[in-house]
Length: 333
Length: 295
Image (cartoon, rainbow over all chains, first blue to last red; front, top):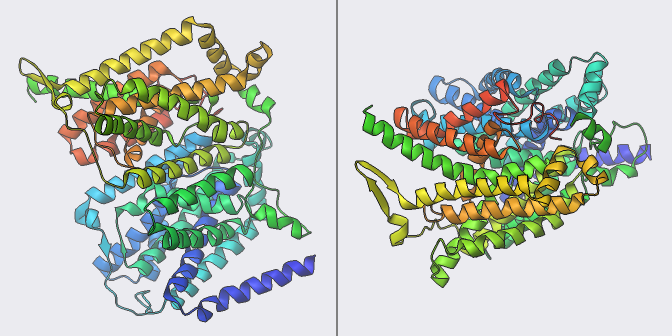
């Protein structure tokens, strides 16, 4: 079965590299870019959401910070977005440090709510600080294709940039998942008090994961800005944060490939539902999408990776879903 | 700021706070007993508003008489949702609990979009525009009615939880679900009842909001964040907390909207929200540590 695993990996890599070259259709090429892009963001989210067990519903904050920072530096100071993206990552790290101090002690839904509020504050700020952010009219980046500007005339070029980010993130996740840091994160997720008792500095480890995740998410935010060449304060919306989290959850929390698989399932699904059903009756596409999500969460709680996984033998990281023991929950009450 | 202006703003803030308390009571009740944060709470409110809107516009029912149908309607709706979606998530991980209701909110918004289109609609009746003049102080009748209703609902809930056997069973379940089960309380039945009751209150809130606000499929997202802020400020699970938290946020929002800029008022209560989470995560009236056992 080990051979099957490598074979599948090889096929996947070849398909990922050649895919958009074969598909000429612009709609399909856009899908390839979006899958790679959202796969990368979801992989970044997975570090805090999947491995550390902090259900962030505010990752749109980091995504938006990346987009705004690189775009403002590019438009106002003519700084290349390649450097702007790094700057955006650093701004995201700073903001993650602030929000991390506030939220890191919170658990479960409280953490989710606090991160959600953080992104909402940034959305309001982006709308109202119009001198800086152009307010509700949004940011428009003029189309000037050049490598220095990180603007390309072909979607295929964008795709390879997104793919490179994605592969780096997946490799990083794999490396973390087998490292001491990764085991610390998993230990904290499974039982924070026990991990703390064993000498893990839980807050520090979680904060580390948050900062890394914020940096990675912001880079993709900059990519998004350069790809779409337009975005509004709605980039901070809860919908985006929820989407990011859902990709990872539907694919498989706390797994190396889960977030990508989730994006590869959900991004085309949304696109197809929109194009086939959306015109028939507004809302029916979202209805079907939402219903499928509820079903997937109730019946495949460990994500679609858990359905594929039995095909492969060999070493693996512990699965993510925690089933809190009734007694444990009660003991804390 | 003149004294008259101060009183006018205070009155507006208190009345707005009543509305906020009203939309938060159901959320806090459900959390307190079931330890579930209903992320589709705003959509329950939206369903209540549309139901009221439909009754008023299509069947020409008085908007306040419509409540007699809206509240039981949402009770039934809550009962169905509990059995279909909430019950299977009890005892599961946070992820499942949070995202099952997130998925539900997507479904409900889409259903409303299909049924009513994306148009923003409101009621325009003599009663919705009625004003009360107390000397130089002017207040809207629907706001006063919503405020009074919030107080009555809270009082009724207090009596129900404090004085009836079922109420005691609900409180026992909230305190310790396994001990309650050992005492012969049918915990799943209490969960069903609590969720349906919380939904009915949210529906009632929706019906009372309909004469004041417009409704659209995404109206829930405007209110749900305020409800979360109120509930966290007051203390998750505390009805008194929802009442006091609602009033505080209403007053803060009104004054900050006047003093600073209405555009920033939401940012201000989010900042309050984060400060509460840092300083006293259990909220004003919550049990200490409840933010940690939320899972």
